Image (cartoon, rainbow, N blue to C red):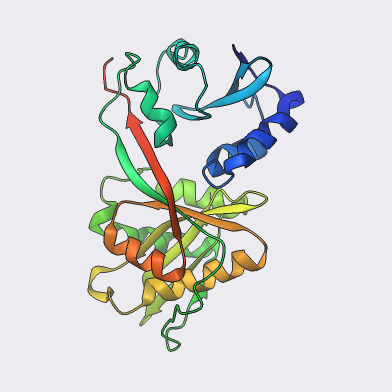
Length: 266
């Protein structure tokens, strides 16, 4: 059975999601921030013998699913179909891959390595000569300017600046950067921080400055600050060179995060 959830279900929902809290970072953050029926967000639960075994969250056109091995894929599929239109289905590979045979109009998935950090590798070293500064809302235009120079971010969200401003204004994000001659050349930030975890995103360095440890220096300060607050850090990536840096810091790979775009016009 699948039904729409509400605030009275919050205790069992959080207990269920915290079984794999790092994988459920976005789900927990969105529920903490927007609740169970924020107009643009809906949350559904799958039950077996009155025990919660799956969560489906729709936020605008994005759908996130987390479940254990016994969830009712057909029932969840009917909920997704009832939405009419959606943009993307995301989640832990072992869970969302089960929707491939349901008839939902899904493109081939983009798969990313999913990693977490609970403590920094004591052998991890950074260049102590690199000066790292904390960003403020006033730095948003500089971050956008740096991002526009980097080919890996081409074709990304057109609303990046607006999203960044919102994150900083609501204090659900923070970031650090390095600069040369007043120009920002490297940057790393969190996004959608919740009460006990944070997602690392937008790790970037201008191409001609790569290999000198600037990104590592930004990440080092950012991660230390969050770990000191008792938060676990999460990130996903597909760039193996970036993955090497993350592993040197102490990030451990725990699985795969899959993203399925909806086939257009279907």
